[in-house]
Amino acid sequence: MGSKKINLKIEKFSNLQSLSARIAQYNFPTNITAGMETPVVFPRTIDFKNEDQLRTCIVGLCNLKVTTQADNYKVLLDPFLIASNDTELVFFIHESSHNEKEIYELINAHSYDSHEAVIAAFLLQIYSNYRTKLSHIKDQLEQLEANSSQTTKNEELIQLKNIKKDTVILEHTLETQHQALEHLFKLDEFSKNLTDQTVIYNIKTAERQITKLVEVYRDLIDAISGLFSDIMSNHLNHLMKYLDSAALVISIPTLIAGLWGMNTGGLPGRHSEQGFLLMLLVSGVFTIVAWIILRFKKFND
Image 1: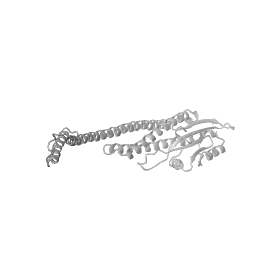
Image 2: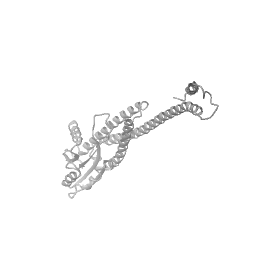
Image 3: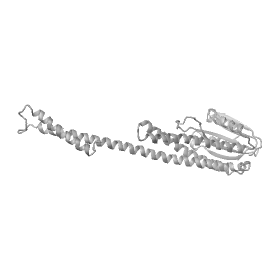
Image 4: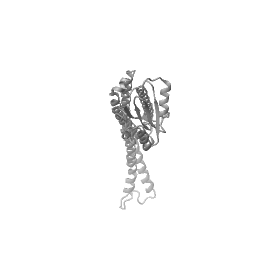
């Protein structure tokens, strides 16, 4: 599986059918593409020998589509395959993927003495992309937290919901990818052909840090969601208190007018031209007194 000369090949595909056709050209198992349409569960590692007894390792992983926009919280998974043996290193990537650019940047920036070294370097690049995306999510969460005391508009709530959904996707993708990498690192051929044995430790450290950050941000999302709920409940309580106070104030002149309007004898001012004005004056006085009492008791906040 190792090689002193890097024989790198990039195979592009547009859909699963074209990918299966390209894999078949190499006589690789076509079932390795199973689950690629659902990238969260796609990562895996298989190790096999072909008819010529050439041992080949195929790793299915998920990169992230890179974006420079910090406000773009959407997580876009980019599944791909790596096939490595003693004669060649083949990347099967989607034709719209940024993987090709990143691969050649790594190849041009450093000198590698084995296919495994290239794979390890690209794994570190993948986790660097995950870290970048998480930094964007962190910025979004800080902005939402800052706005939480000023607004509870639907836009913020929808944005929070989308961020929570994407952190869940990241968490489960990382979990599946961890299992694939554990299988890869246990292969003797892989570790044997790495001259720098610390690179596996660096990959595991990066993976552990990213996984922990996802857990932290999910807890922050839950906290901010609770904060939004508490703020909305508080606003609703204030609104209900104000409406109850207003209803109480309005009920006083309503009660007085209702009593004064009874069709019975003995009502004050019944035969006076000032009776209506007297009723308005009494209602106004009691209404103002009730409003002052409620305001003093802070029932109209």
